[in-house]
Image (cartoon, rainbow, N blue to C red; front, side, top):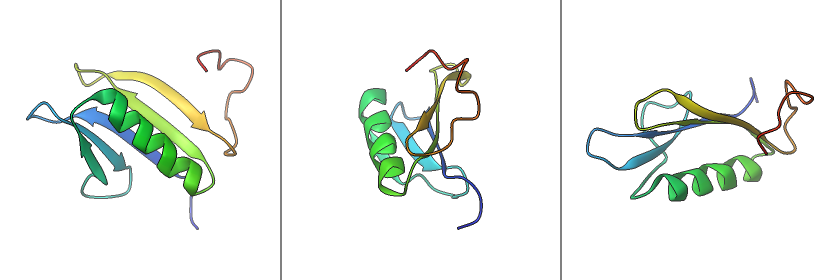
Length: 82
């Protein structure tokens, strides 16, 4: 496998939420709520050995970043979110 696993959750133009691998051209899954999309993205990252999850807010700006175990956390002392 090349680089680290990275996924993003963002709101689409139609109001649904997408769970997308950062290297992919299309979302892996579409959900009615942001919570569902985050849950699916987290589960997918756990299944491939961890990685980085980026969640965008409704305004399109990064709302949250999280390292899903067992991926290496780039900033372990400063990550107080989870």
